[in-house]
Image (cartoon, rainbow, N blue to C red; front, side, top):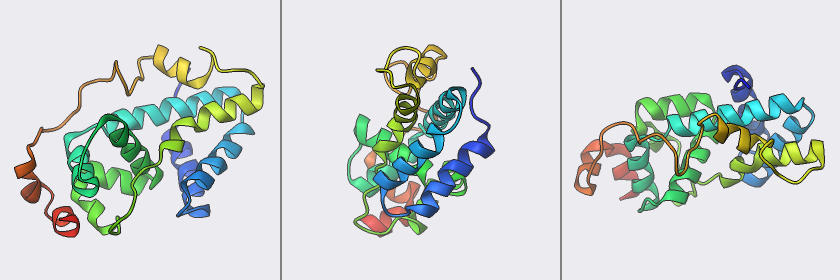
Length: 179
């Protein structure tokens, strides 16, 4: 099974973001609806591409941005933050991977950068189309079988590790905005 081409993946993400810019649940439902009308292979391909981008965003710079914005980092919130980052669209995603401090221009104060529902979009679309209970043939099972795990078997975090004292110099715009 091949991942969804990036252009198609980002088009779906961007359309959902434009239709429901401030409502992650609605955005996720728009994605579920868009995928549920496609062949099962495309639903699984979406999950594969999503996981590739979640793994790609597992970088110490992105982690530092989340630490500054949320005040802490732990496994689940860090994953949901990366989902949020993907949910902002390709332009924001790519800019943040290059320069995490670019998020200072996007993130308003007291904003929750969490898009956990994105993790369940392909599974829900697959369930809608098949009417089956989840098993290894579902998108998540296929992705893990292909080595696309963002959890226990994930590749190591990329980039340069940091300590909290580094954050003001590492990401000065985010530091100024949130600290």
